[in-house]
Length: 358
Image 1 (cartoon, helix red, strand yellow):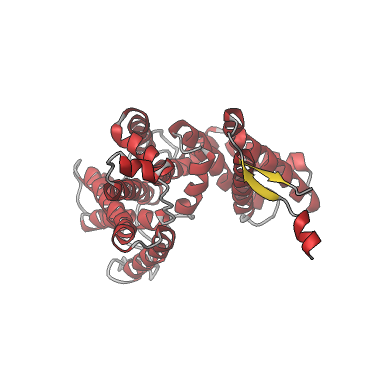
Image 2 (spheres, rainbow, N blue to C red):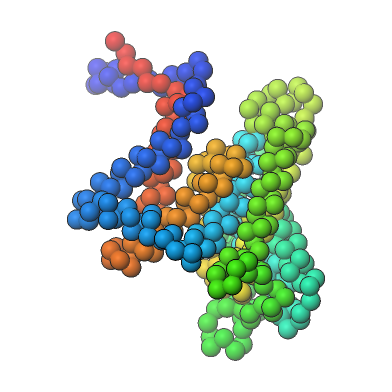
């Protein structure tokens, strides 16, 4: 038994990781995902080329497909750039899905209250409401961490299910549309409470512009401000941050509040954009999937834009695979899981090495 244990490798930290390999980690993860996906499709009896074409090329072969890609990439990119504020500070906020839901509730609640009102002020008010709702929900795990030293992973995750249950209660209870034929949904928002469409006949909406603006602001904060520098230092070395006089608690509050606000705006953009009302399933797990987007994009604004497009494509590809290949749409989650698996594996081998005992 002892000899078998000695055969196992030991994980040893590298003295210095390669900058080139750090840059190549997402590329390696995507290539390995495509290879593994081809093997899976072959085992299922499909031609790998046909399957990959159906999954990755066919969905964006026309203008409508590209517009749908942007529709799905918009909330992913916005949530992911918010998560970058937490992850850069070594705060693992897993509750973006709950913050998205609360943003939809707060902002959507304003839209429901003024459902028969038109005014240019309504949509900005709903966006502010979404940001406030997400930020307040994000501050709960921040307060619990700073006051009681609780684990933010557990608290933020549990708050997701509380937010989903609150939404479920509202759409089957006080906010239920009395003329909705008993379906668990609210009244539709007025035209003033809807995101303007950017192109006629397509679903791309103003939320895309908001996302790009916030990504640019985030890039500026990360690279040009003292706050961005403090986030990086605090995440890289909390001890050095304390010696430098950085207020750790303030950084935690701000990181969670910004992350929650961005997720809340993403939730409001969903319900005031493609959906137009509140109901139970307003998000296909965008909050959780955005974690993959953030890491695939290396927490960099430009990287997150490209990563959001790649992950959004897995949603569209899954729908086409179900339609043309007669396989479950859950295959999209398989590809997302493979990307995350290979991403973490490549990250591990770039920063650590395996040593075998002689």
